[in-house]
Length: 624
Image 1: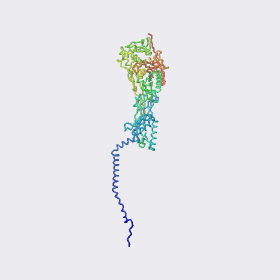
Image 2: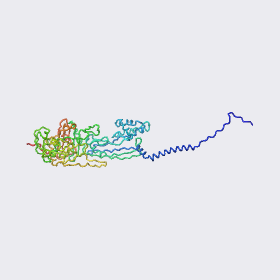
Image 3: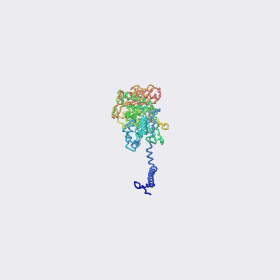
Image 4: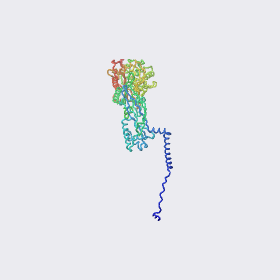
Protein backbone atom coordinates (compact mmCIF):
# COMPACT_ATOMS: atom_id res chain seq x y z
CA UNK A 1 0.00 0.00 0.00
CA UNK A 2 1.11 3.53 -0.89
CA UNK A 3 1.74 6.33 1.63
CA UNK A 4 -0.97 8.72 2.02
CA UNK A 5 -0.55 11.91 0.12
CA UNK A 6 0.21 14.93 2.44
CA UNK A 7 -2.29 17.67 2.07
CA UNK A 8 -1.15 21.17 1.48
CA UNK A 9 -1.30 23.56 4.50
CA UNK A 10 0.64 21.62 7.01
CA UNK A 11 -0.40 19.33 9.77
CA UNK A 12 -3.89 18.53 10.69
CA UNK A 13 -5.23 21.01 13.40
CA UNK A 14 -5.85 19.84 16.91
CA UNK A 15 -9.45 19.99 18.18
CA UNK A 16 -10.11 22.97 20.63
CA UNK A 17 -9.83 22.34 24.29
CA UNK A 18 -13.16 22.41 26.19
CA UNK A 19 -14.10 25.82 27.95
CA UNK A 20 -13.55 25.55 31.65
CA UNK A 21 -15.88 27.88 33.76
CA UNK A 22 -14.62 29.33 37.04
CA UNK A 23 -16.29 28.32 40.27
CA UNK A 24 -19.41 30.57 40.97
CA UNK A 25 -19.12 30.26 44.70
CA UNK A 26 -16.68 33.20 45.25
CA UNK A 27 -18.87 35.52 43.17
CA UNK A 28 -22.01 34.44 44.98
CA UNK A 29 -20.29 34.97 48.27
CA UNK A 30 -19.26 38.48 47.17
CA UNK A 31 -22.76 39.41 45.96
CA UNK A 32 -24.31 37.91 49.07
CA UNK A 33 -21.93 39.88 51.24
CA UNK A 34 -22.76 43.11 49.38
CA UNK A 35 -26.48 42.50 49.71
CA UNK A 36 -26.04 41.63 53.37
CA UNK A 37 -24.20 44.91 53.96
CA UNK A 38 -26.90 46.88 52.14
CA UNK A 39 -29.66 45.16 54.08
CA UNK A 40 -27.73 45.70 57.28
CA UNK A 41 -27.54 49.43 56.55
CA UNK A 42 -31.28 49.53 55.90
CA UNK A 43 -31.97 47.53 59.07
CA UNK A 44 -29.77 49.81 61.17
CA UNK A 45 -31.39 52.92 59.64
CA UNK A 46 -34.83 51.41 60.15
CA UNK A 47 -34.02 50.66 63.78
CA UNK A 48 -32.76 54.22 64.18
CA UNK A 49 -35.91 55.74 62.66
CA UNK A 50 -38.45 53.42 64.26
CA UNK A 51 -36.83 52.77 67.60
CA UNK A 52 -33.96 55.05 68.58
CA UNK A 53 -35.15 58.40 67.10
CA UNK A 54 -38.81 57.52 66.65
CA UNK A 55 -40.06 60.32 68.90
CA UNK A 56 -38.05 63.03 67.16
CA UNK A 57 -39.11 61.95 63.69
CA UNK A 58 -42.72 61.60 64.75
CA UNK A 59 -42.67 65.13 66.17
CA UNK A 60 -41.08 66.47 62.98
CA UNK A 61 -43.65 64.71 60.86
CA UNK A 62 -46.44 66.04 63.04
CA UNK A 63 -45.03 69.53 62.72
CA UNK A 64 -44.91 69.39 58.96
CA UNK A 65 -48.14 67.52 58.51
CA UNK A 66 -50.53 69.06 61.03
CA UNK A 67 -51.75 72.64 61.16
CA UNK A 68 -53.25 74.28 64.24
CA UNK A 69 -55.52 77.31 63.79
CA UNK A 70 -57.21 79.49 66.35
CA UNK A 71 -60.99 79.64 66.18
CA UNK A 72 -61.91 83.15 67.28
CA UNK A 73 -64.77 83.40 69.73
CA UNK A 74 -67.73 85.39 68.50
CA UNK A 75 -67.85 88.75 70.25
CA UNK A 76 -71.05 89.39 72.15
CA UNK A 77 -73.66 91.80 70.87
CA UNK A 78 -74.43 95.17 72.42
CA UNK A 79 -78.11 96.10 72.38
CA UNK A 80 -80.29 98.88 73.69
CA UNK A 81 -82.82 98.38 76.49
CA UNK A 82 -85.36 96.97 74.00
CA UNK A 83 -82.98 94.45 72.43
CA UNK A 84 -82.23 96.54 69.33
CA UNK A 85 -78.74 95.70 68.07
CA UNK A 86 -76.17 98.50 68.41
CA UNK A 87 -73.00 96.45 67.87
CA UNK A 88 -72.85 93.01 66.24
CA UNK A 89 -70.22 90.65 64.85
CA UNK A 90 -70.27 89.27 61.32
CA UNK A 91 -68.26 86.37 59.85
CA UNK A 92 -64.78 87.29 58.74
CA UNK A 93 -61.39 85.64 58.20
CA UNK A 94 -57.83 86.36 59.22
CA UNK A 95 -55.69 85.56 56.17
CA UNK A 96 -52.56 83.76 57.41
CA UNK A 97 -49.57 81.95 55.92
CA UNK A 98 -46.84 79.45 56.78
CA UNK A 99 -43.60 81.15 55.59
CA UNK A 100 -41.71 77.84 55.48
CA UNK A 101 -43.95 76.71 52.62
CA UNK A 102 -42.72 79.51 50.35
CA UNK A 103 -39.03 78.59 50.42
CA UNK A 104 -37.04 77.07 47.57
CA UNK A 105 -37.02 73.69 49.32
CA UNK A 106 -40.81 73.49 49.16
CA UNK A 107 -41.71 75.22 45.90
CA UNK A 108 -38.48 74.46 43.96
CA UNK A 109 -38.32 78.14 42.99
CA UNK A 110 -36.48 81.03 44.60
CA UNK A 111 -39.09 83.76 44.18
CA UNK A 112 -42.06 82.07 45.83
CA UNK A 113 -42.86 84.98 48.22
CA UNK A 114 -42.72 87.49 45.37
CA UNK A 115 -45.08 85.47 43.17
CA UNK A 116 -47.53 84.91 46.02
CA UNK A 117 -47.46 88.57 47.04
CA UNK A 118 -48.17 89.64 43.46
CA UNK A 119 -51.35 87.53 43.48
CA UNK A 120 -52.47 88.52 46.98
CA UNK A 121 -51.75 92.26 46.96
CA UNK A 122 -54.71 93.35 44.78
CA UNK A 123 -57.11 91.07 46.65
CA UNK A 124 -56.06 92.20 50.11
CA UNK A 125 -55.50 95.80 49.09
CA UNK A 126 -52.00 95.79 50.53
CA UNK A 127 -48.58 96.80 49.34
CA UNK A 128 -46.78 93.95 47.60
CA UNK A 129 -43.46 94.63 49.30
CA UNK A 130 -45.12 94.44 52.72
CA UNK A 131 -46.55 91.03 51.92
CA UNK A 132 -43.16 89.79 50.73
CA UNK A 133 -41.61 90.75 54.09
CA UNK A 134 -44.30 88.77 55.89
CA UNK A 135 -43.81 85.72 53.66
CA UNK A 136 -40.02 85.88 54.02
CA UNK A 137 -39.50 86.76 57.68
CA UNK A 138 -36.14 87.21 59.37
CA UNK A 139 -36.86 84.14 61.48
CA UNK A 140 -36.46 81.29 58.99
CA UNK A 141 -38.23 78.86 61.34
CA UNK A 142 -41.38 80.95 61.69
CA UNK A 143 -44.42 78.94 60.63
CA UNK A 144 -47.09 81.59 61.12
CA UNK A 145 -47.74 85.11 59.90
CA UNK A 146 -50.95 87.07 59.60
CA UNK A 147 -51.26 88.73 56.23
CA UNK A 148 -54.56 90.54 56.85
CA UNK A 149 -57.08 90.63 59.67
CA UNK A 150 -60.86 90.47 59.54
CA UNK A 151 -61.39 90.07 55.84
CA UNK A 152 -64.84 89.46 54.42
CA UNK A 153 -65.88 85.95 53.30
CA UNK A 154 -65.76 87.25 49.72
CA UNK A 155 -62.06 88.06 50.04
CA UNK A 156 -61.21 84.61 51.37
CA UNK A 157 -63.30 82.99 48.61
CA UNK A 158 -61.24 84.83 45.97
CA UNK A 159 -58.01 83.57 47.51
CA UNK A 160 -59.35 80.05 48.00
CA UNK A 161 -60.57 79.81 44.39
CA UNK A 162 -57.21 81.02 43.08
CA UNK A 163 -55.39 78.62 45.36
CA UNK A 164 -57.52 75.68 44.15
CA UNK A 165 -57.02 76.63 40.50
CA UNK A 166 -53.24 76.70 40.95
CA UNK A 167 -53.29 73.35 42.75
CA UNK A 168 -55.32 71.71 39.99
CA UNK A 169 -53.13 73.11 37.23
CA UNK A 170 -49.90 72.10 38.97
CA UNK A 171 -51.18 68.50 39.03
CA UNK A 172 -51.23 68.33 35.20
CA UNK A 173 -48.68 70.99 34.26
CA UNK A 174 -45.38 70.52 36.05
CA UNK A 175 -44.26 74.01 35.07
CA UNK A 176 -46.99 75.52 37.23
CA UNK A 177 -46.20 76.06 40.91
CA UNK A 178 -48.91 76.50 43.50
CA UNK A 179 -47.38 79.50 45.25
CA UNK A 180 -50.48 79.91 47.42
CA UNK A 181 -50.28 76.46 48.99
CA UNK A 182 -49.09 78.02 52.26
CA UNK A 183 -51.93 80.54 52.53
CA UNK A 184 -54.71 79.76 55.01
CA UNK A 185 -57.63 81.43 56.75
CA UNK A 186 -58.55 81.53 60.41
CA UNK A 187 -62.26 82.06 61.08
CA UNK A 188 -62.74 85.39 62.79
CA UNK A 189 -65.36 88.10 63.05
CA UNK A 190 -65.76 91.72 62.09
CA UNK A 191 -67.42 94.29 64.34
CA UNK A 192 -70.28 96.13 62.70
CA UNK A 193 -72.33 99.01 64.05
CA UNK A 194 -75.71 98.90 62.23
CA UNK A 195 -76.69 102.44 63.22
CA UNK A 196 -73.48 104.13 62.08
CA UNK A 197 -72.47 106.96 64.40
CA UNK A 198 -75.47 106.56 66.72
CA UNK A 199 -74.25 106.25 70.34
CA UNK A 200 -70.65 105.88 69.13
CA UNK A 201 -69.38 107.74 72.19
CA UNK A 202 -71.03 105.13 74.40
CA UNK A 203 -70.20 102.05 72.34
CA UNK A 204 -66.58 102.82 71.44
CA UNK A 205 -64.94 100.62 68.84
CA UNK A 206 -62.86 97.44 68.32
CA UNK A 207 -59.24 97.80 67.22
CA UNK A 208 -57.27 95.76 64.68
CA UNK A 209 -56.36 93.19 67.34
CA UNK A 210 -60.00 92.54 68.14
CA UNK A 211 -59.85 94.38 71.47
CA UNK A 212 -62.17 97.11 72.64
CA UNK A 213 -60.59 100.48 71.94
CA UNK A 214 -63.01 102.75 73.77
CA UNK A 215 -66.39 103.00 75.43
CA UNK A 216 -68.37 99.93 76.47
CA UNK A 217 -66.32 97.84 74.00
CA UNK A 218 -63.26 98.60 76.13
CA UNK A 219 -64.91 98.70 79.53
CA UNK A 220 -66.56 95.28 79.13
CA UNK A 221 -64.02 93.80 76.72
CA UNK A 222 -63.43 90.70 78.85
CA UNK A 223 -67.12 89.78 78.97
CA UNK A 224 -67.70 90.59 75.29
CA UNK A 225 -64.64 88.74 73.98
CA UNK A 226 -65.35 85.18 75.10
CA UNK A 227 -62.74 82.41 74.83
CA UNK A 228 -61.04 81.36 71.58
CA UNK A 229 -61.00 77.73 70.46
CA UNK A 230 -58.53 75.70 68.37
CA UNK A 231 -58.76 73.33 65.40
CA UNK A 232 -56.00 70.89 64.38
CA UNK A 233 -55.97 69.04 61.06
CA UNK A 234 -53.59 67.28 58.67
CA UNK A 235 -52.56 69.05 55.47
CA UNK A 236 -50.65 68.19 52.37
CA UNK A 237 -49.75 70.64 49.68
CA UNK A 238 -51.59 73.34 51.54
CA UNK A 239 -54.89 71.44 51.56
CA UNK A 240 -56.62 69.55 54.35
CA UNK A 241 -56.44 65.76 54.28
CA UNK A 242 -60.01 64.74 55.09
CA UNK A 243 -59.29 61.06 55.81
CA UNK A 244 -56.91 61.74 58.69
CA UNK A 245 -59.44 63.51 60.84
CA UNK A 246 -59.15 66.62 62.98
CA UNK A 247 -59.54 67.74 66.57
CA UNK A 248 -61.33 70.87 67.69
CA UNK A 249 -61.70 72.79 70.92
CA UNK A 250 -64.83 74.87 70.37
CA UNK A 251 -64.80 78.58 71.01
CA UNK A 252 -66.97 80.03 73.77
CA UNK A 253 -68.83 83.13 72.52
CA UNK A 254 -68.74 86.33 74.48
CA UNK A 255 -71.66 87.61 76.55
CA UNK A 256 -74.26 89.92 75.09
CA UNK A 257 -74.55 93.29 76.82
CA UNK A 258 -77.85 95.11 77.18
CA UNK A 259 -77.53 98.85 77.75
CA UNK A 260 -79.98 101.15 79.50
CA UNK A 261 -80.23 103.53 76.55
CA UNK A 262 -83.22 103.70 74.24
CA UNK A 263 -82.16 103.80 70.58
CA UNK A 264 -84.98 106.13 69.57
CA UNK A 265 -84.37 108.61 72.39
CA UNK A 266 -80.64 108.43 71.65
CA UNK A 267 -81.40 109.30 68.03
CA UNK A 268 -83.58 112.26 69.05
CA UNK A 269 -80.92 113.59 71.43
CA UNK A 270 -78.11 113.15 68.92
CA UNK A 271 -80.09 114.80 66.12
CA UNK A 272 -81.03 117.79 68.29
CA UNK A 273 -77.54 118.49 69.63
CA UNK A 274 -75.89 117.97 66.24
CA UNK A 275 -78.24 120.47 64.63
CA UNK A 276 -77.71 123.09 67.36
CA UNK A 277 -73.92 122.71 67.43
CA UNK A 278 -73.83 123.25 63.67
CA UNK A 279 -76.21 126.21 63.86
CA UNK A 280 -74.21 127.86 66.68
CA UNK A 281 -70.85 127.01 65.08
CA UNK A 282 -69.81 125.64 68.44
CA UNK A 283 -66.86 123.43 69.34
CA UNK A 284 -69.03 120.63 70.68
CA UNK A 285 -72.11 119.77 72.67
CA UNK A 286 -73.70 116.95 74.66
CA UNK A 287 -77.16 115.85 75.77
CA UNK A 288 -77.96 113.36 78.53
CA UNK A 289 -81.37 111.82 79.19
CA UNK A 290 -81.82 109.97 82.47
CA UNK A 291 -84.60 108.09 84.20
CA UNK A 292 -85.02 110.05 87.44
CA UNK A 293 -86.25 107.04 89.44
CA UNK A 294 -83.71 104.38 88.47
CA UNK A 295 -80.69 106.47 87.45
CA UNK A 296 -80.60 104.60 84.14
CA UNK A 297 -79.22 106.63 81.23
CA UNK A 298 -81.67 106.68 78.34
CA UNK A 299 -79.41 108.67 76.02
CA UNK A 300 -75.94 110.19 76.01
CA UNK A 301 -75.29 112.06 72.78
CA UNK A 302 -72.20 113.94 71.63
CA UNK A 303 -71.57 116.26 68.71
CA UNK A 304 -69.37 116.00 66.76
CA UNK A 305 -69.23 112.22 66.79
CA UNK A 306 -67.68 109.49 64.66
CA UNK A 307 -68.61 106.34 62.78
CA UNK A 308 -66.96 103.30 64.41
CA UNK A 309 -67.44 101.37 61.15
CA UNK A 310 -64.79 103.56 59.48
CA UNK A 311 -62.24 104.94 61.92
CA UNK A 312 -60.00 106.11 59.08
CA UNK A 313 -62.32 109.09 58.61
CA UNK A 314 -62.80 109.82 62.31
CA UNK A 315 -61.52 112.95 64.02
CA UNK A 316 -59.32 111.87 66.92
CA UNK A 317 -60.73 114.61 69.17
CA UNK A 318 -64.26 113.30 68.62
CA UNK A 319 -63.57 109.61 69.26
CA UNK A 320 -64.12 109.68 73.00
CA UNK A 321 -67.22 110.42 75.05
CA UNK A 322 -67.03 114.16 75.73
CA UNK A 323 -70.09 114.04 77.99
CA UNK A 324 -67.96 112.12 80.48
CA UNK A 325 -64.47 113.23 79.55
CA UNK A 326 -64.84 117.02 79.30
CA UNK A 327 -64.35 118.96 82.54
CA UNK A 328 -65.84 122.46 82.51
CA UNK A 329 -67.29 125.08 84.82
CA UNK A 330 -71.07 124.54 84.94
CA UNK A 331 -72.26 128.08 85.55
CA UNK A 332 -75.77 128.83 86.80
CA UNK A 333 -77.13 125.29 86.53
CA UNK A 334 -75.04 124.67 89.68
CA UNK A 335 -77.04 127.29 91.63
CA UNK A 336 -79.62 124.63 92.41
CA UNK A 337 -77.08 122.99 94.74
CA UNK A 338 -76.50 126.29 96.52
CA UNK A 339 -80.26 126.70 96.94
CA UNK A 340 -80.50 123.12 98.19
CA UNK A 341 -77.98 123.92 100.93
CA UNK A 342 -79.83 127.11 101.88
CA UNK A 343 -83.20 125.33 102.11
CA UNK A 344 -81.87 122.21 103.83
CA UNK A 345 -80.13 124.30 106.49
CA UNK A 346 -83.34 126.32 107.03
CA UNK A 347 -81.51 129.55 106.25
CA UNK A 348 -84.33 130.79 104.02
CA UNK A 349 -87.54 129.81 102.25
CA UNK A 350 -88.62 130.38 98.63
CA UNK A 351 -90.43 133.53 99.81
CA UNK A 352 -87.48 135.03 101.71
CA UNK A 353 -86.76 138.56 100.55
CA UNK A 354 -83.37 139.21 98.94
CA UNK A 355 -82.25 142.71 97.97
CA UNK A 356 -80.03 142.37 94.91
CA UNK A 357 -77.90 145.48 94.17
CA UNK A 358 -76.42 146.31 90.78
CA UNK A 359 -72.93 145.43 92.03
CA UNK A 360 -71.63 143.51 95.04
CA UNK A 361 -68.13 143.89 96.46
CA UNK A 362 -66.75 140.75 98.01
CA UNK A 363 -63.13 139.91 98.66
CA UNK A 364 -60.97 141.26 95.88
CA UNK A 365 -63.72 141.44 93.25
CA UNK A 366 -66.77 143.39 92.25
CA UNK A 367 -69.54 140.97 91.25
CA UNK A 368 -72.42 141.58 88.87
CA UNK A 369 -75.22 139.68 87.16
CA UNK A 370 -75.28 138.78 83.49
CA UNK A 371 -77.34 141.87 82.73
CA UNK A 372 -77.00 145.38 84.08
CA UNK A 373 -79.99 146.20 86.27
CA UNK A 374 -81.34 148.48 88.94
CA UNK A 375 -81.66 147.10 92.43
CA UNK A 376 -83.84 144.02 92.33
CA UNK A 377 -86.23 143.11 95.14
CA UNK A 378 -86.45 139.39 94.70
CA UNK A 379 -87.68 136.41 96.64
CA UNK A 380 -85.26 133.51 96.99
CA UNK A 381 -87.39 131.88 94.32
CA UNK A 382 -86.82 134.94 92.14
CA UNK A 383 -83.06 134.74 92.68
CA UNK A 384 -83.16 131.29 91.07
CA UNK A 385 -85.72 132.23 88.41
CA UNK A 386 -83.74 135.28 87.25
CA UNK A 387 -80.42 133.46 87.82
CA UNK A 388 -78.88 136.21 89.91
CA UNK A 389 -75.22 135.68 90.81
CA UNK A 390 -75.36 138.41 93.43
CA UNK A 391 -78.51 137.01 95.02
CA UNK A 392 -76.91 133.54 95.20
CA UNK A 393 -73.78 134.94 96.89
CA UNK A 394 -75.93 136.72 99.45
CA UNK A 395 -78.05 133.64 100.16
CA UNK A 396 -75.13 131.21 100.60
CA UNK A 397 -73.35 133.73 102.79
CA UNK A 398 -76.02 132.97 105.40
CA UNK A 399 -75.07 129.28 105.64
CA UNK A 400 -72.81 129.99 108.61
CA UNK A 401 -71.63 132.84 110.82
CA UNK A 402 -68.34 133.16 108.92
CA UNK A 403 -67.44 132.82 105.30
CA UNK A 404 -64.96 129.96 105.92
CA UNK A 405 -67.67 128.03 107.77
CA UNK A 406 -70.17 128.75 105.00
CA UNK A 407 -67.63 127.43 102.49
CA UNK A 408 -67.40 124.15 104.39
CA UNK A 409 -71.17 123.76 104.45
CA UNK A 410 -71.49 124.40 100.72
CA UNK A 411 -68.59 122.05 99.97
CA UNK A 412 -70.27 119.25 101.91
CA UNK A 413 -73.44 119.61 99.80
CA UNK A 414 -71.50 119.70 96.54
CA UNK A 415 -69.78 116.45 97.50
CA UNK A 416 -73.10 114.82 98.43
CA UNK A 417 -74.42 115.70 94.99
CA UNK A 418 -71.44 113.84 93.47
CA UNK A 419 -69.27 116.81 92.49
CA UNK A 420 -65.52 116.17 92.58
CA UNK A 421 -65.88 112.39 92.31
CA UNK A 422 -66.50 109.74 89.68
CA UNK A 423 -70.12 109.09 88.74
CA UNK A 424 -69.97 105.33 89.37
CA UNK A 425 -70.18 104.36 85.69
CA UNK A 426 -66.56 103.21 85.54
CA UNK A 427 -66.42 104.51 81.99
CA UNK A 428 -62.99 104.68 80.28
CA UNK A 429 -61.51 108.18 80.35
CA UNK A 430 -64.17 109.64 82.65
CA UNK A 431 -63.10 112.78 84.54
CA UNK A 432 -64.16 113.40 88.14
CA UNK A 433 -63.92 117.14 87.54
CA UNK A 434 -62.13 119.49 89.92
CA UNK A 435 -63.39 120.62 93.32
CA UNK A 436 -60.75 121.89 95.71
CA UNK A 437 -61.30 121.45 99.46
CA UNK A 438 -62.77 124.61 101.06
CA UNK A 439 -59.59 125.56 102.88
CA UNK A 440 -57.90 125.93 99.49
CA UNK A 441 -60.58 128.12 97.92
CA UNK A 442 -59.16 131.41 96.79
CA UNK A 443 -60.73 134.70 97.85
CA UNK A 444 -62.74 134.86 94.63
CA UNK A 445 -63.65 131.15 94.64
CA UNK A 446 -65.50 131.61 97.92
CA UNK A 447 -68.01 133.71 96.01
CA UNK A 448 -67.88 132.25 92.49
CA UNK A 449 -68.39 128.60 93.47
CA UNK A 450 -71.95 129.27 94.74
CA UNK A 451 -72.98 130.35 91.23
CA UNK A 452 -71.06 127.69 89.31
CA UNK A 453 -67.60 129.10 88.56
CA UNK A 454 -64.30 128.06 90.13
CA UNK A 455 -64.88 124.29 89.99
CA UNK A 456 -65.46 121.86 87.12
CA UNK A 457 -67.75 118.95 86.38
CA UNK A 458 -68.69 116.62 83.54
CA UNK A 459 -72.10 116.53 81.89
CA UNK A 460 -73.17 113.33 83.63
CA UNK A 461 -72.52 114.85 87.03
CA UNK A 462 -74.65 117.86 86.08
CA UNK A 463 -77.54 115.66 84.94
CA UNK A 464 -77.29 113.57 88.12
CA UNK A 465 -77.76 116.68 90.28
CA UNK A 466 -81.17 117.33 88.72
CA UNK A 467 -82.15 113.68 88.84
CA UNK A 468 -81.36 113.72 92.56
CA UNK A 469 -83.79 116.61 93.13
CA UNK A 470 -86.38 114.95 90.89
CA UNK A 471 -86.03 111.72 92.87
CA UNK A 472 -87.03 113.31 96.15
CA UNK A 473 -83.50 114.17 97.24
CA UNK A 474 -82.04 110.66 96.81
CA UNK A 475 -79.05 110.36 94.49
CA UNK A 476 -79.02 107.13 92.47
CA UNK A 477 -75.68 106.37 90.81
CA UNK A 478 -76.18 106.53 87.04
CA UNK A 479 -76.01 103.27 85.11
CA UNK A 480 -75.42 102.42 81.45
CA UNK A 481 -75.68 98.62 81.59
CA UNK A 482 -78.90 96.77 82.42
CA UNK A 483 -77.27 93.34 82.35
CA UNK A 484 -75.52 90.63 80.36
CA UNK A 485 -76.60 87.39 78.69
CA UNK A 486 -74.03 84.57 78.69
CA UNK A 487 -73.53 81.65 76.31
CA UNK A 488 -76.11 79.66 78.29
CA UNK A 489 -78.76 82.26 77.42
CA UNK A 490 -79.32 83.36 81.00
CA UNK A 491 -79.73 87.07 81.68
CA UNK A 492 -77.74 88.43 84.61
CA UNK A 493 -78.97 91.86 85.70
CA UNK A 494 -76.41 94.50 86.62
CA UNK A 495 -75.88 95.18 90.33
CA UNK A 496 -78.27 97.65 91.89
CA UNK A 497 -76.85 101.18 91.90
CA UNK A 498 -75.84 102.88 95.12
CA UNK A 499 -78.41 105.27 96.60
CA UNK A 500 -77.58 108.24 98.84
CA UNK A 501 -79.87 110.65 100.60
CA UNK A 502 -78.62 114.16 99.73
CA UNK A 503 -81.44 116.43 100.87
CA UNK A 504 -84.81 115.83 102.45
CA UNK A 505 -87.87 115.09 100.36
CA UNK A 506 -89.36 118.39 101.52
CA UNK A 507 -86.32 120.33 100.25
CA UNK A 508 -86.39 118.44 96.94
CA UNK A 509 -90.08 119.21 96.35
CA UNK A 510 -89.53 122.87 97.23
CA UNK A 511 -86.63 123.07 94.78
CA UNK A 512 -88.79 121.48 92.06
CA UNK A 513 -91.43 124.20 92.58
CA UNK A 514 -88.74 126.91 92.43
CA UNK A 515 -87.29 125.43 89.22
CA UNK A 516 -90.74 125.65 87.65
CA UNK A 517 -90.55 129.42 87.98
CA UNK A 518 -87.45 129.45 85.77
CA UNK A 519 -89.54 128.06 82.91
CA UNK A 520 -93.10 129.06 83.72
CA UNK A 521 -92.69 132.65 84.94
CA UNK A 522 -92.31 135.35 82.30
CA UNK A 523 -89.31 136.72 84.18
CA UNK A 524 -87.61 133.34 84.18
CA UNK A 525 -84.60 132.63 81.97
CA UNK A 526 -85.87 129.29 80.66
CA UNK A 527 -89.13 130.10 78.90
CA UNK A 528 -87.93 128.50 75.65
CA UNK A 529 -88.02 125.12 77.42
CA UNK A 530 -91.78 125.17 77.97
CA UNK A 531 -93.69 122.09 76.83
CA UNK A 532 -97.43 122.51 76.26
CA UNK A 533 -99.46 120.43 78.68
CA UNK A 534 -96.56 119.51 80.96
CA UNK A 535 -95.16 121.12 84.08
CA UNK A 536 -91.44 121.62 83.49
CA UNK A 537 -88.69 122.30 86.03
CA UNK A 538 -85.36 123.56 84.76
CA UNK A 539 -82.43 125.91 85.05
CA UNK A 540 -80.32 127.81 82.54
CA UNK A 541 -76.57 128.25 82.67
CA UNK A 542 -74.08 130.52 80.88
CA UNK A 543 -70.54 130.18 82.22
CA UNK A 544 -67.20 131.61 81.25
CA UNK A 545 -65.31 128.84 79.54
CA UNK A 546 -61.69 127.85 80.02
CA UNK A 547 -60.06 127.22 76.64
CA UNK A 548 -58.30 123.81 76.91
CA UNK A 549 -55.61 124.99 74.48
CA UNK A 550 -54.58 128.14 76.37
CA UNK A 551 -55.88 127.63 79.91
CA UNK A 552 -57.51 131.07 79.76
CA UNK A 553 -61.13 132.10 79.68
CA UNK A 554 -62.45 132.31 76.14
CA UNK A 555 -66.04 131.91 75.07
CA UNK A 556 -68.89 130.39 77.05
CA UNK A 557 -70.40 127.13 78.19
CA UNK A 558 -74.14 127.30 77.54
CA UNK A 559 -76.40 124.82 79.32
CA UNK A 560 -79.90 123.89 80.41
CA UNK A 561 -80.92 121.20 82.91
CA UNK A 562 -84.32 120.09 84.08
CA UNK A 563 -86.91 117.38 84.56
CA UNK A 564 -90.55 116.68 83.79
CA UNK A 565 -93.29 116.41 84.82
CA UNK A 566 -92.19 118.80 87.55
CA UNK A 567 -94.73 117.53 90.08
CA UNK A 568 -94.20 113.81 89.28
CA UNK A 569 -90.72 113.60 87.72
CA UNK A 570 -89.86 110.80 85.32
CA UNK A 571 -87.15 112.14 83.00
CA UNK A 572 -84.14 114.41 83.36
CA UNK A 573 -82.56 116.10 80.34
CA UNK A 574 -79.28 118.02 80.42
CA UNK A 575 -77.79 119.92 77.48
CA UNK A 576 -74.49 121.79 77.22
CA UNK A 577 -72.83 123.51 74.26
CA UNK A 578 -69.21 124.63 74.26
CA UNK A 579 -68.08 127.91 72.69
CA UNK A 580 -71.02 128.91 70.50
CA UNK A 581 -69.72 131.52 68.04
CA UNK A 582 -72.81 132.25 65.95
CA UNK A 583 -76.00 133.77 67.33
CA UNK A 584 -76.78 133.76 71.03
CA UNK A 585 -74.55 132.03 73.58
CA UNK A 586 -77.02 132.17 76.49
CA UNK A 587 -77.99 128.74 77.78
CA UNK A 588 -81.70 129.49 77.80
CA UNK A 589 -81.59 130.58 74.17
CA UNK A 590 -79.62 127.73 72.57
CA UNK A 591 -79.93 124.83 75.03
CA UNK A 592 -83.51 125.52 76.12
CA UNK A 593 -84.90 124.54 72.68
CA UNK A 594 -82.74 121.40 72.62
CA UNK A 595 -84.07 120.46 76.05
CA UNK A 596 -87.65 120.98 74.86
CA UNK A 597 -87.18 118.95 71.68
CA UNK A 598 -85.53 116.01 73.43
CA UNK A 599 -87.83 116.06 76.47
CA UNK A 600 -90.97 116.10 74.32
CA UNK A 601 -89.73 113.11 72.33
CA UNK A 602 -88.75 111.17 75.47
CA UNK A 603 -92.09 111.81 77.18
CA UNK A 604 -93.97 110.55 74.14
CA UNK A 605 -91.68 107.56 73.65
CA UNK A 606 -92.05 106.45 77.26
CA UNK A 607 -95.76 107.36 77.21
CA UNK A 608 -95.53 109.65 80.23
CA UNK A 609 -98.84 111.54 80.54
CA UNK A 610 -99.21 115.10 81.86
CA UNK A 611 -100.30 115.27 85.50
CA UNK A 612 -102.98 117.85 84.76
CA UNK A 613 -102.08 119.87 87.87
CA UNK A 614 -101.50 123.63 87.73
CA UNK A 615 -97.98 125.09 88.15
CA UNK A 616 -96.87 126.26 91.57
CA UNK A 617 -96.45 129.92 90.46
CA UNK A 618 -94.26 131.11 93.32
CA UNK A 619 -93.61 134.88 93.37
CA UNK A 620 -90.39 136.17 91.84
CA UNK A 621 -90.38 139.71 93.21
CA UNK A 622 -91.75 141.58 96.20
CA UNK A 623 -92.55 145.21 96.80
CA UNK A 624 -90.25 146.85 99.33
